Amino acid sequence: MMLEKLRACWGFSPTVDRNVTRVEGFLKGKSFADLAQEHSLSKTRVRQIIEKADRLVGGGILTKAEPSSPRSDFMVAYPYVWNLAEMHRLGSVTPHHFFAELERAGSLERLVDKMKRLPWCAPTTRELARLVWLRERGKSPWPAMKRSSVAIVEPSYPADHPERGLRCQFALEPALQELAQRAAESGWTEDEIAYALFELAGARLTECQRQF
Image (cartoon, rainbow, N blue to C red; front, side, top):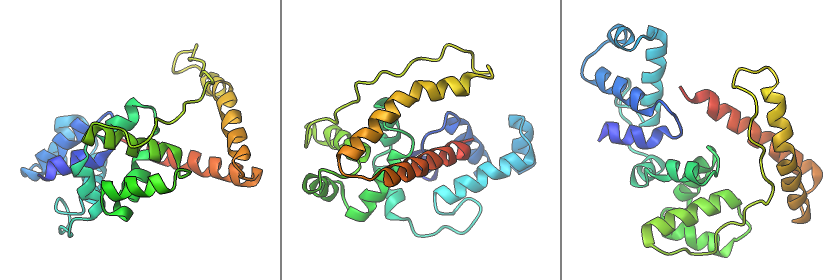
C-alpha cells in the first residue's frame, strides 16, 4: 500500500518506477550506501530520493507516519490523473490544482457541481475534472475545453544546441500572445495577466526542478 500510494503521489516524472524500486529496497533494509552502489548514484542523491518519498506519503519511510491527508487519499483513488493530464497536454501543474480543488470540495461530485456553477474557473483544471468525471462515469458533465488554433512549431535543433532555448521562445510567443489577448478580452488587466504568467512559469520551473 505504501508503494502504491507513493507511485500515485509522485506525479510527473520519467523515473517514478526506478525511484519506487529504490524506496522499496530501503524499506527492505538496504542502506543508502547499498542503494547508491546498486543504482550507481551518490549516497546524497539516494537520501534525497528517500526523503522526497517520505514527504510525499506523509511519513512512514524515514519519519513517523502522519495521518493520511485527504489530498493524498484522492491521489491514490485517482492515480491516473497525472497520465490523463499529460496525455491531454494540460501541464504538469494542473494535477496539483485539481487535487487541491478536490480536497477543498471533499469529493469529485461536489467539485464537478461547483465547476458547473462556476464555469469561468481555471480552464485546464476544469478540463481535467471533466476528463476524470468522464472516465469515472462514462459521460461528460460539460463540453470539452476549446483548444487554441495556434500551432506550436516543432524544434529543428538537437537538444544540446545553444539556440534551442531561444527558438522555443519564438515557437511559444504566438500562443502566449493569443492567451494574453483572450485573458484581456475576459476582463483581466495587463498587469494581472503578466503577473499570472510569471507565477505560472515559476511554478512550472519549480515542478521541473523537483523531478529526479
